Image (tube, rainbow, N blue to C red; front, side, top):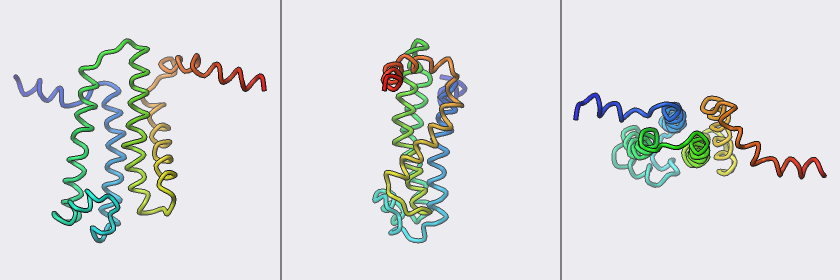
Amino acid sequence: MELSLIVRYLVPKGVWLKRTILLFAFIFLDYLVTIIFCKTPYAEGNLLARSFMQTYGIVMGLTIFDLLLGIPIYGILCIDSYLIKYTEQHSTKAELAVDLALGWLIAGGHFNGAASWLWNAPHLMRQTLGFMIYLAIAFPSLYSPPRLSFLKSVLAPFRQKNMEA
């Protein structure tokens, strides 16, 4: 197989590339803030990251940890962008489910980790804020208004209940 074909499949296509960049921006934020504020490995709350930091040093250990954590995420996003084909309506629903799941787990979790160095708030509050920031950036940049038109039919029963009350 040609090298250009291999490289082609290593970069997600379409909105999946934007989604990948956005998710990895949250991972990089956590990485950068931790590198800046972590003076000893014992200050790190993630036990696995802490063990890498104790073994390889703070910067190298955190770098190895984040690379090992990021490779499967990147692989999933590449596979989704090339191998999974949906109709437009199912594609939007699948991408929305992916955004909700990865937004909470990846963006929210890494924002929680980054904010924990700067803001003494409950974990759930920091993670929810990271999730909301992710969605606030993802929805306008990844979804055009016609793609989200199916939400009107989903939300219609709730609107009718509010109008009756």
